[in-house]
Amino acid sequence: MDIDLLERTANALVSPGRGILAADESTGTMSNRLKLVGLDTSEEARRAYRANLFATAGCESAISGVILYDETIRQNADDGTPIPDYLASRDMIPGIKVDTGAKELAFHAGEKITEGLDGLRERCAEYFTLGARFAKWRAVIIIGDGIPSDACISTNAHALARYAAICQEQGLVPIIEPEVLMDGTHDGQTCFDVTARVLDETFAACANQGVHLPGALLKPNMIIAGKGCENQLSREEVAKLTVDCMTGHVPAEIPGLVFLSGGQSDEDATAHLNLMNAMDVDHPWQLSYSYGRALQAAALKTWASGTALESQASFAHRAKMNSLARSGDWLVSLES
Image (cartoon, rainbow, N blue to C red):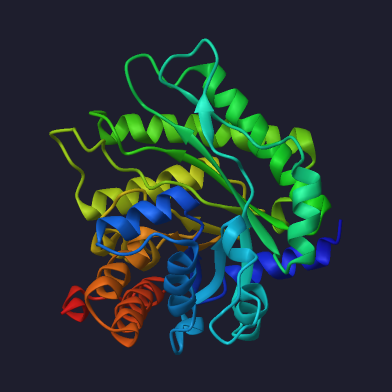
């Protein structure tokens, strides 16, 4: 394990004013998104859309790294350069999704366990040779009647820790993503309590597996009431509860938190991050972003109806808004 490389990479990914673009949609998910806006769903169509996004002029000022899918890390940019090499040449660190998806948890109806540990060491070694320097593994935690169970939380925490250790062994910074979903009717306090349990269990498992926390990043959900809850939290409440939860349950050794958007609107994801960074709170981490749809939705819509440059402009705007949120300098007036 090259500790210096891991720490340098982790800190570069959360450098001031920048965050991570999650472009790791599976082949099926990306095809469905293209289909929904009336576009071709071929491998070339997927490559062309992503290559155009990555080529956005100046986006490296807001994007420190890009999470790729297995298909994409093997493709080329429009100029023929392998995509990982192209990103690196633009000062954007290539990353890779390494889990194989969430499956039903045996004997626990309605709960999921993320799979992919079999063969992970070999996949990580190959991805490193292809240019990846960080990785992502997403656990899915659902709030519902009697769930999440202790079994769901413990098995997902153990898998996240084993993944993180294997990644670090192979030179990849692990992004640890235990996502508590927004789906459901639960209130904000329930989201807080479940998220706290999940974080505690995850970092206990990481300690048991010997994960080097200064060479890892956390990709947490924000504290948000379920979509079906009648009592939604204000933006200010989301920001305060999220920082309070992280402060009580995330070790100081982690260099940065790269929040997921998790189904929030583009503007809400930016506003919540902005409020967190504007708070007068002493905490040890960089508060950043690792957004997928919240960075890409407008660009994809424009890709379908406009020109390549117009799609890039949509992406550049969204990236700039989140870059400003890194320092608490975003204003709603800038959205128009």
